[in-house]
Image (cartoon, rainbow, N blue to C red; front, top):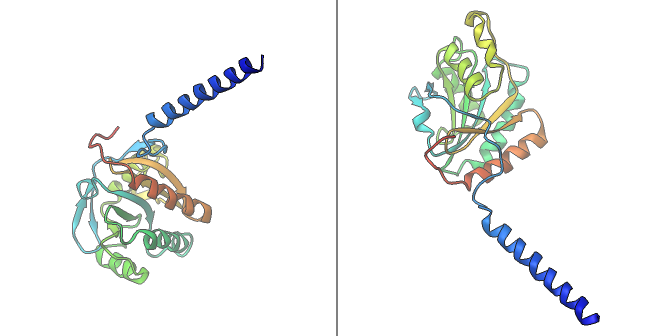
Amino acid sequence: MKRKTWFYIVFFMILFGGFYVFLFATIDSSKSLLPVLNVVQPFSFERQDGQQISEKDVAGKVYAAEFFFTTCDGICPKMNRNMKKVFEQFKNEDDFLILSHTVDPKTDDAARLKTYADSLGADIKTWWFLTGSKDSLYKTARESYILDDPNNNAADIDEQFLHTQFFALIDRNGRVRGIYDGLKKDEIEKLITDIKDLLKEERTGQPV
């Protein structure tokens, strides 16, 4: 009876051991478990150095996106202090970028954005400050990065003012993989962790 009991114990140990070996062998550790929330649509904006950039310039890179304005004395300074922590963490990572879009392009031209970027010590190699037409900026915030209700695009653009504290995280394939509160320390730490996670993913070349 004792021998039969040991037989079953060993049998089930082998069975469960084989199951876990199979389970881990079939999991692709190079793929993040972060969900795909949206796909970024084509865009074209002017960078702080006057260069025109588009979605082609960020293809194959992981990046964080935010929306702010240089004259903001409310949430924007804290948002960009927190974004600077992200910048400091990844400033030497060739496959990472930060895209900071103004929501007040009438005031924030490329020259003003450069002055603002320089005040933060932002290296243009990693941190881009972008301006463009108001409708294009707002449409990108809402329909690509889902940082505001897309239905707000229906209102008269001249009467709109977008003011969001949230950051979006985009993978190498131009897909939104996370939204983070740019004012909260734990959310910034989560963003940094998720960036590291996405940097391990390979580009498929086929956004989903």
